[in-house]
Length: 99
Image (cartoon, rainbow, N blue to C red; front, side):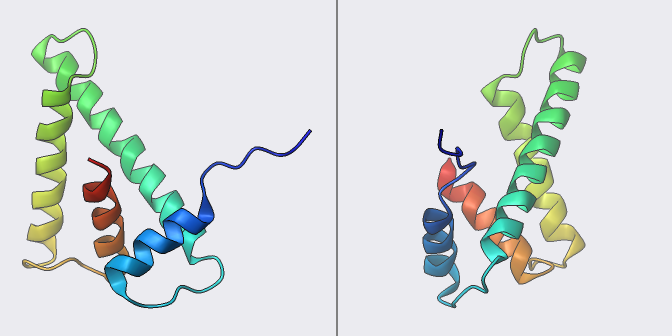
């Protein structure tokens, strides 16, 4: 039985390379994917909390959008209008490309 992959490495590398126009080191895509997954986990946790506060039974698209806007505006605020690092820019580009 073959081992199932979590994500297509070539696809992640291609997406990041198209946004940055730079080559990636050997395992940079793994770190980008893990950062992306941590971001998504935090986003869903915050959306769940906000949804419960509003009385929703589950996570709604509206709640996710509100939490995402807050997270993106916070990232812009903390870095004075720019992303704090190229890694943050890559993660946000991946996220924006998936919506």
